[in-house]
Length: 485
Image (cartoon, rainbow, N blue to C red; front, side, top):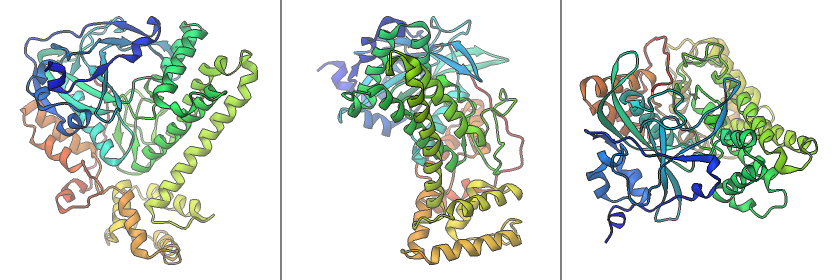
């Protein structure tokens, strides 16, 4: 048997059927002392990988030893970064290939931090251990929460120091995604390719992600609608869980509808629409409250890239494209409203639901209380007598209206609370807990807190006794995140 069969690697490289414009063949930089820091055995099993991958994983997951069938490339793309358009590309990442698992599902295997590429723009192409462990932890937590996301297969250390403000231990993250095709990929094709290049990319993307529309006469318009709907569902889900991506540039928007590129992301503790954590987002462009609107802006940029495919006369395509973007606006509101109903156990929809929901959120903001723990308390029917929110007259009035709503539904109160339990996580990756776990791993080489937190976040809806310590109200802190290299 070949090494490929023994290890379960089943790599294909269909992306390379696209014109050369879209990628450059590269080789990951080899390292002399690779070591495996963390490895996702459950994900490996889903991908069809055998235990033997783990045994020499340090070499494989740093790019020092390539799996059979891999044909590494760096992908080219562009993007609007904080509103400004620029040429980009994989500056420190390499796509090894597409793993086809035993169910026939296709996933990109992507090394992040594997060395310089033609798109590095002066950077060293390296990554450091802390941010790679952070992406591993947060992306797997997102998966546990049921939010569409790229996954993390492994983090391997390189044995080399990476120089930022201080020397830091180098590492490579192995990321798994449905694909790494971005809105910025289409912007790149529109700006630097020709119509045939753009059409090749669109047809490939449709075949890979939306094959049900491949034969549609207006498939490019249908494609726009599909991507917009996926983005609407995704961003609504972020809002429902209090997740703040932090860098919603068009190069970080996957047309698959998955969350990708975890940089300065974080979860909101105290409810505030203006919450922003990223150190570089001085104006709050990507704040929690702005995320749905930025999603619409990004979809408008995607629509602009597709106009020439929708009609030879782009002006005639604009009205239909605008309708698609407007549909996104309606959809993100609809997905969010339905999700908030579930968080409050509302099964029988009513015209007054949005007012009821908004009144509660206004109270959360007014009294500066924790977003996740408030819904956790409502779900468990445990209203802390010391809570300034729960003891306020305004909340008591709101609570009475809400309880009347639940009592008069077509289902029992128990069914309503069970629905809440399924949609309100008991725990999230609290920022202070994440930092404690990363500090222990990086500074002390103690991975126990990391693995314990990761295990707790595997099923955040379990409401187990073991999870309770991770639901403790976080300390007051001025938390700030960084893009991380």
